[in-house]
Image (cartoon, rainbow, N blue to C red; front, side, top):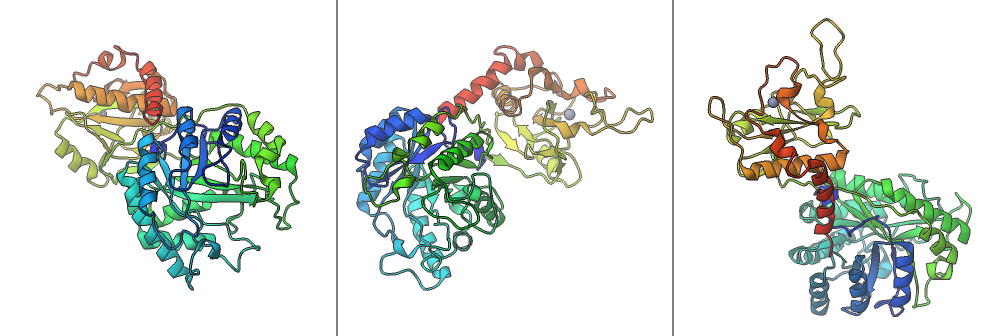
Length: 496
Ligand SMILES: [Zn+2]
């Protein structure tokens, strides 16, 4: 799944917090006031069956995404019971998109009847249990969260299996299935006394520990999976000696900076919901509870407001052409329209043949779009061009400049071969408009940079797209407005 396409709240900033450590959140009205003051869009909510319903309802009313953990005491081994399932159905019908069904299965204290004696057994049982719940949640159109592991530290190593090993074994055991269907991975990114931007690959106790977990999943599954931090954070009264102990001021400073950095984090990191806004159980370290530390709430509330404008343009059908190469760090700056001069089937044969040609997207006559090459790779659709700085070779002995393909995105529109007139259907033009407006929005490409192959070909040998009325694409509704509307539409599509 393309990272930009997971459900997100309107005006998403990826920022959140873990609300009350207690189920049902008895002080939820006070929590809500703090959450709104800080401009958070994601809130981790603990519920026992449906006990958090009023809080969840209030969050949804305000356009905030509740991430609901179906709390059970010592949930491993085991799956959701009948009453849990009933509550999940109710929450999903209300509009909740994300569910956690268990917790930290690498910890002995999260197992009843004792933790399995080997890590392999522990990882296998926890992963198999989760798959059952995950399929139930996916069938409701919601997103199951693969159980986050506790970060193993010097404090718990005798009662915990190592974080990354547990995840790797579980992933290998169940394979990519639920993640291909849209599941995400939970992360508990506890940084304790480590600064927000410090990181080491070997140790799980860092704020950016999602990086290693994201990379681990990609190495095993072969694609990027969304990760979501449902606990985590600074201080909590533990220190490992590498950095000094954090006081309230340092905690607040680290949260403010970690939250600011979220604006530019990779889209596969969906949200951060650190521990802990409030604790009506009274069982947890009071120094880490935001409601007790005004510095944290004040500093987070003062973070300048931003929106992560992530554009989802996932195209469900893919061909995976072998004909692509590296952009060498260049970014797409132009969009080039072509027509295929042949049927969809003929285009498929041609584009899948190694060392021939390709484009990023092909749009069939019925408006179906096929993803052929990923945007971040070069597709082979332009030859010598008139694009400034990218004419490849001027034919007069000057050294070749970079190929136009480095900075372009190509869309092929299926049309019959010459001499049959090229005719484009309304559905096809609408689909091209959608692909182009997504690209304009995502890569900040101006309307003047949406061009036809025939207009940029250096030798005027190309006549495609033939009979194409460029005005029909770009007029009517200005495509630039379209790009902006498209962003709004996509965000609204995941709204409430
Ligand atoms: Zn062409």
